[in-house]
Length: 320
Image 1 (cartoon, rainbow, N blue to C red):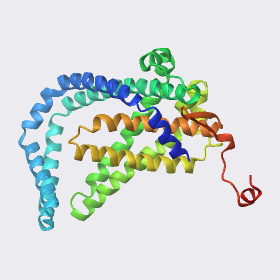
Image 2: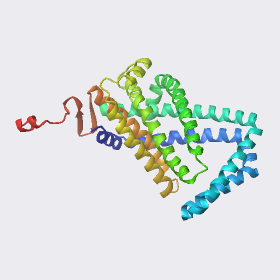
Image 3: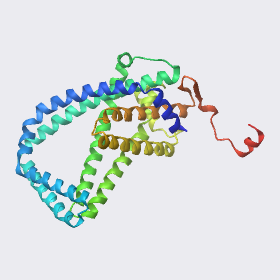
Image 4: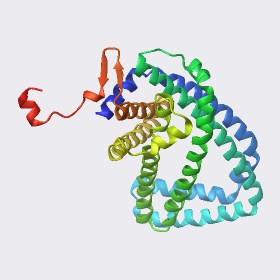
């Protein structure tokens, strides 16, 4: 039921996607320009190096043979990729100081960009909440300014924790992907495990943090109170939440992959902000259902979760 209600709320708030898109495009362009200016000299040296070109040739040959069904050649190209990768690592070690500095700059820019994106998500959740609770049409920018203090505090706590979690998962996934690189069959299996582990990592993070933002906006709780509420299991039904997030996460991956391949990336302009909006919609619906609060699915439909339950056989025959 929550998944169906999420879809209805998502459609009812579809216009928010374009505001998300504009906000994220501005952040991406600005952060991309700054990042490019800072690391372009180092990247230029890396791209022109013989070791990096051999790595690209090996990866290209591996993918080409895999797509053409030439299985007997895969082991050869797999070994070339492994050798070229080792050479690139040696090259990187020779420029350790420069790469550490560049990595720190990129991480700092990424952190700031994610922080501003978090402000966008907070404003999106506030706009959706006003529409669900009061059927009110609130301006996106005005909502962001009105809730700026709370959004700044929330992002100052959530974003560093989220990035730390993502870095730990990312490093683990990197070693999982390259650990079995010397064997073609194991390499293909590792790709499957890589994607599966990413889905599980996202699902676990979202399951335990999904009530944090709604508790701040709809529940009017303090920062610590909202954080504590998100991890309290009473009334949360974590297995149901985890199941819904699994479906949403896989659906988001599939839609974005299809947009990338079938529209040459153009569709990502809609699917990426849509992914954030539908996740926020589910978080809000999940909170309303958990607290048994009434909310609008659209202008003609109000959900009263306190009265929603599966009719038993005895109730059916009694006509209840």
